[in-house]
Image (tube, rainbow, N blue to C red; front, side, top):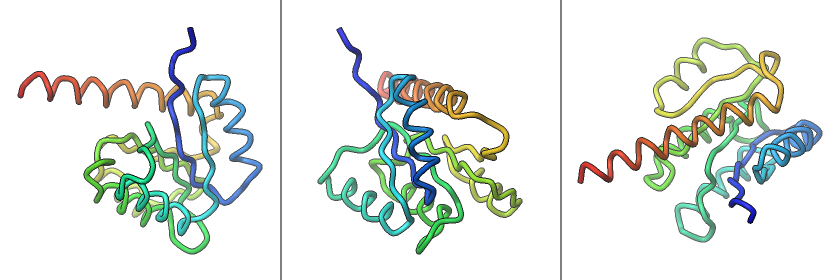
Length: 144
């Protein structure tokens, strides 16, 4: 019996990197959907907000994207009640203290440099973040 695959949306303007991660994530039991720019990512967030599509289990966001930055996408995701606790990894080659600080303002969000981690490690990190968020949600429900 197959366990249900967790869905991750990866917002990245490099299709080859999306494909590399898709292979690693598939091996780790994830379904990875690629989105090529910030504008498309905002459209996905709006579809989730309007309940046209189901929320993913996690997001991966590049920062330097065409049209709308990954930081703006991050802020929009966190404004949405449905996505408030969904794990997000800001996955970038851009080391910038301002962006790191912005990322730290949001719960269940990590800032990771692409040069510091390989895709299988990223998949493991996201798996742990998803489990942690499920435990927090389960604990919150048991209190009420």
